[in-house]
Length: 568
Ligand code: ARG
Image (tube, rainbow, N blue to C red; front, side, top):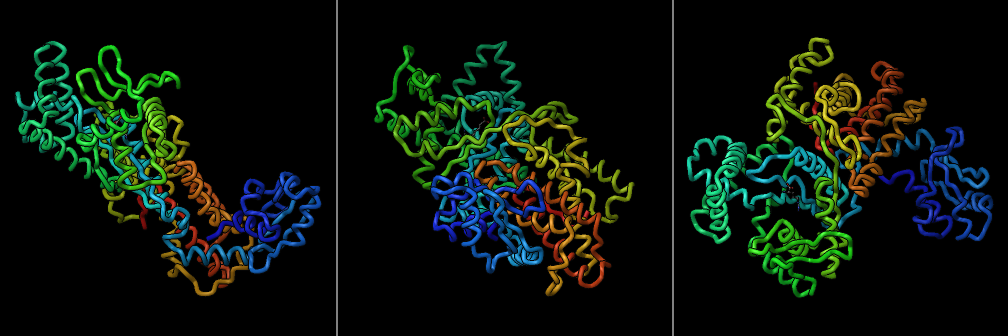
C-alpha cells in the first residue's frame, strides 16, 4: 500500500512537474486537527518556484487532482496546503489493502535486486558468552527480516569465533583429563569450563601455558590430531548453538566463522601489500598505519607470523564482496568494537575499495542487570530457561486472576512469552542506548512489553473467534467515522512507512514503537466502541477493522521475532 505521505508527494509532483523528492520533508501533521490530516509547508519551495509561498500553496491547490484518491479536499491556508482524508475512502483503501496483502502487508519491493549481508550473533566457541551476543542476535535477526520484507535479498552470516588461542587451552585440557561424555552432553558449557580452568592453571604453571601454545601451533599447522579435536569441539558446540537459535526462531544462511578464512588470509594480506599500505613495526609485526586518521594501526600479522581478528575481517569482507556482490554489509556488533570497525573501514578506503562505503557498523549499547538464578550470565541457554521459568510464574498469576484463557498449554506458552519478553526488552529503545534488564518489568502483561503485544493480539483473535467471521462481506466503511475509530484506521496505514524507516536507520525499534502506538489506538477504540452487538452495519465494519489491526500487529511482531500466538 502506498502511504498517504507518499501519495501526497506523488500528487504534488504530478501537479507541479517537479520530482516527488522535492516535497520530501515538507509533509507534516497540521498543528490543529480541524485543519486537516496533512499539511504541506510551501516556504522551502519559494526558490524552486520563484514565487511567494502563499501563491505556491494557492496554485498547487488549483492544480492538484484528488480524483480517485482517499483525499476529500486540499485547502490553501496561507503558505500551507492542507489535505483532508475522507473517512470512508480512507478506511476502504486501508482495510482492503490489508485484507488483500495479508501477511505481506507492510512488505514492498523497495530493495528488489539488492543483496544485504547481515553479520550477526557471532559468539565465540569455548569463550564466555556475552549478553551482547544476545543483543546482536535479536537486532540482527530482526534486521534480516525487515530487509527481506522490503524485497532485498538478505544473507545472514554467523561469523563464529571458531579459531584462536583458546582452542590451544581447550585441547591441552581435554587431552589431560577431558571427558568426551561431558563434552557431548553440554558442549558449550563444558568447552568453556575446560578453557576457564586451564586458564587458571596457566597462571601457576608456565609449562601448562607452553603446552597450550604448542597445541595451537599444531592446529595452525593442520596437524591431523589437533584438527580432529578442533572439529569435534566446533561441531558439537555448533549443533548446540543451532538448537538455541531454533528456540529464538533465528536462522543463518551461513556459519562461516573465522576459521573459514584460514586459507583466504594470505590472499587478503597480499592485496593489502599490493595497495602499498603495509608497514612493519620494529618487532616485525605487519600493519596498516592509521596515524593520519587518529587511530592506532590495524595489525594484520604478529611478529611470529600469526594472523588476527583484523586479518580475518578483511579476508571476510573481500570474500563477501566477491561471492555475493552486496549493496550493503551490516555488522551487528556492540559499541566496544567501534574502533575496530573504524580501523577496518579506513583500511578498506586506503585500499581504494568501494566496499568501504557499503559497510555499516550497526552498534548497540550495554545490557545492565541481566542475571539468572545461576548467577552472572555465561550461557545463552540459561537466559532462555530463566525467561521461560519466570514467564511460567507470571502465567500462573494471571491465570489465577482470570486474565488468561483456561486450558492453554502452559509450558509452550511460557517459552513463547519468555522469548517475546526478552526480544521486546531489547528492541523497544534505540539500539545505541544501554538496556537495563529487569525480569519483572520485561514480563509485565501491561505496559510496553512483549507479553503485552502477544496478549493484545490474542485478544484481537478472541474477538474474531467470537464474531465467527474475519472478513465480513462488503462492509459499510462510512461507519468507521468516530474519532477513535478513524485514528485506528490511520495508525494502520502507517505500518509500511514504519518498516521502511526501520531499514533506513537499521533500527528495529521503529517497528516496536509503531506497534505500541497501534495497540494504544486499538485499546482506545475498543474501550469506547462495542464491536459484537453494535448493530448490523457497525458490527460488520468494526469486525473488518479489528481483523486488519490483527494483521498489522502480527506482521510487525513477526518482523521483530516475537512469537505470534492465537490464544493466551
Ligand atoms: N566473535 C566476535 C565477538 O564475540 C564478534 C564477531 C562480529 N563479526 C565480525 N565480522 N567482526 O566479539
